[in-house]
Image (cartoon, rainbow, N blue to C red; front, side, top):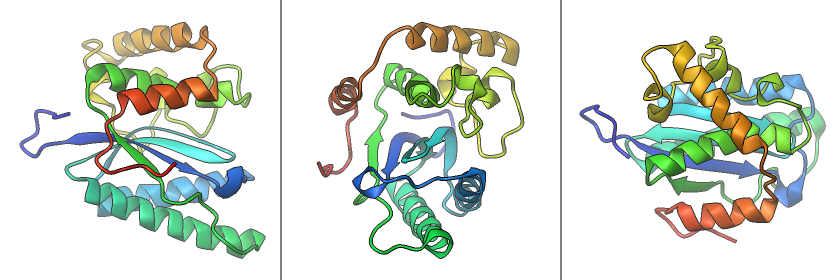
Length: 205
């Protein structure tokens, strides 16, 4: 997917999961540490973060960059340094994260929109909040209320929803409310991502 910038800009859906489904975030400081590292390395690797949601055992992100190598460098450093911090705090051996993070290229506007909403609703479907805007560790409030979030650069679809933030936020909230009414199981999500997302590299099962 290209933006009007001179340099081609592509967006990937990036997922990091705890090894064996283990919890990787236990308290607010863990989330702050993870997002602080993410903030630091987005700039270093010339990446834009469009959406994110971090819940106890995994994190979803929509990341824009000119090349997958930028995202690979970002994620490798982020996950490695967070893992070091985690083990210093909690102890333990072995891998904190499950294998390599997964990344899927967003190939069209429809997939971008659906994936954005899926990420914002992830904490709700996990039973962590009644409404997506109630959850602290996601990008939802930056979209619905224009709250300052230095991590976020609004995605192209959102910017095309209206001429001002209030119009765009109202349209985006309508999307969230519509999709929240439909139950989505883990298998539903897996089937959707496997069908829609076109990965640049083979994914590990």
